[in-house]
Amino acid sequence: MGIVDDDIRRVREESDIIRLITQHTQLKKVGRSWKGLCPFHNEKTPSFTVNQENGRYYCFGCQATGDSIEFLREIDSLDFVAAVEMLAAQNGIPLRYTDKKESKSRNRRKELIELVAEAVDFYSKKLIDMDNPEARPAREYLKQRGLAGDIAARFSIGWAPDSWDSLCKHLSVSNKDLVASGLGGINKNGGQYDFFRNRILFPIFSEQGDPIAFGGRKLPEGEGPKYKNTSDEAEIYSKSQILYGLNWAKEEAGRVDELVVCEGYTDVIGCHEAGISRAIATCGTALTQEHVRKMSRFAKKVVLAFDADNAGQSAAEKVYEWESEFDVLFKVADLPEGQDPGDLAFSDPNELNRIVESAKPHMQFRVDRVLGKGDFESKEGRARAAIEAMKVVAQHPDELIRDQYIVQIADKCLISADEIRRRASKENSKVEKSVTAREVVPAKMERLTTEYQALRMLIHKPEEVTDWLHPVLLSDPMAESVFVALTSSNDLHEANQSLGAEESDLIGRLSVQEAEDDKPLGVFSRLLSLAAERKAVEFESLARQSGELSEYQADISFLRRSVMELNEEGIHQIKDGMELRSWLIDKSEA
Image 1: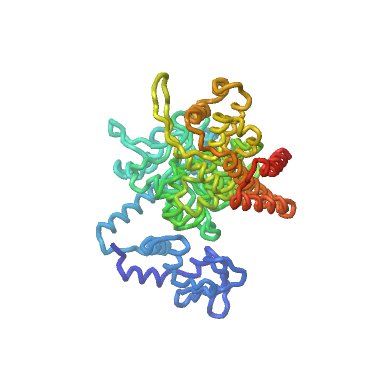
Image 2: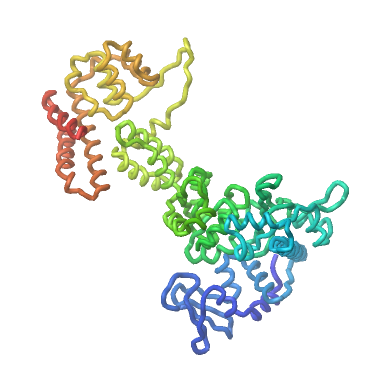
């Protein structure tokens, strides 16, 4: 399918390139040319030159070049045919197509758009008709939301009367056109009826600015669902592909390479009034692949500006797939609980702008939310926070990105990155199982860690362990819980009674294992090395966070040296490791 060459040539020749470009940037005539700031990249010194005689432009900064068709394609992210059609419509040039069916289809679309445009005008006039008392509740509602007067006019907001067929009578069109346009339907008696009744209407435009549908909101005392959109059965509207406000947002989006996605129409309007003109919204549906595909044509950064929890959880895994597929970056604006952009836009527009400007990458937002709920006063709390954060990070398909977040979580939780990877792997590999009374379930084979080995010795030969084993040598919260239970109880039965199912199961497994080959010196040496390594990582994290490396340098050097000596030589007597053990206890209590 294509447009007849002669018609394309006529569009090029009759389009006023100066009038077209000055809609997007100011031009000043210099000699026979026009010059101004380039609309395709940020610059302070004009490098964009237009020759009106031959209808061409060129930027000496970014090398953008072309004619009126190319300009419209680039500035509005249109394909070639759409750009030619838009210029033809602006200049009153009829187009012929090489495919007669395509020509008929496009003419049909034009007819339906004209019908919807007439409906937009009809509903808008009904809203502002001060002689019509029936519209007063709608005007009062809009006034309360800050959307009255000029704002309502600027966004073509309208009101559908509480009548079955007021629009139908006004349009006086065939049943086929009424249904195809989405403006009404046919009842069982063959009569026409309006699709919208007693609702505030927000016209929905295509990215080219053509009216194609409506979003209707019922009044507080109205009947039916809160929101009602034009049906997808309409020939020129599909909610999974259309983004409300893109026709207004695309210019700023192209300039700053960012779109802000809200939940509702009033949120978009509020953002625009607050100076965030790149705001858009889906039309009563969740984000789809087609939405993202369309957004990626206009900007490479997408800020989700709706309820924080929903924004963070919204199609999380799909978001990362879309980032890769369409080369976009999703970010989340951390809005105050219970507030949406539409409210904040009028109560505190500066704060709304600050929140949008400080939006975080989608993954960063989710990780911060998890860590923000963590308990960092205890080792158990830090370990649990790290594991929960890693569950979020594990959803990202890019290993390089995952690893950067692992390092970040390690710093925050004062745990080594390798330890976090191990814990996360262990946590994610758990298989939930329910054990009923008297049911025998085979125990899952598990790698015996040094900490579990120490607990096994504490059970079987406590006299060789009691003097040196201490919670400071343990990093596993379960191991520490078992240690406390064993050392504060008279026997295994009493210890079991004070523990949960997992800890009790661990004691059960260790109590039936052989401990004859467990060597106190080797276990103590390994625990000391691991504890010193953890403390060094903790101090390094604290030094990075505080920026005071000198405050921690001596301790870090001592610990690194101790780890190296323990790994190379170990200890020859228990007393050789007691000094480091005491040092670790003192530092953990400080």
